[in-house]
Length: 124
Image (cartoon, rainbow, N blue to C red; front, side, top):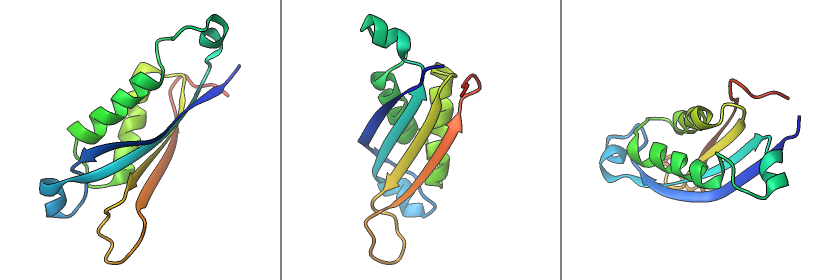
């Protein structure tokens, strides 16, 4: 089976995720990177959009980050993958959620969590 990878890097939203009470009130910037591996051969051969592409993937990430609330960025990443599989179950999703303003008690560029999940219909 053919597999290609669609990559979205640095898509950024304002969200309210985190364990600290002020994170639920003030919110902060979150960035998401997506690597979505699935069979795109039909779209490639016809040069036409299929049922799933970067617009749909972006909208899913936006909805999870901006409309839902979780304590852990690992959970945010997992939820994005779950929602992608509702639209494209034959996909492998690697989702990275980046939290530049993570309150770690010291200086760092960012905290991030990455999950890789296979949709229920994904086949190697």
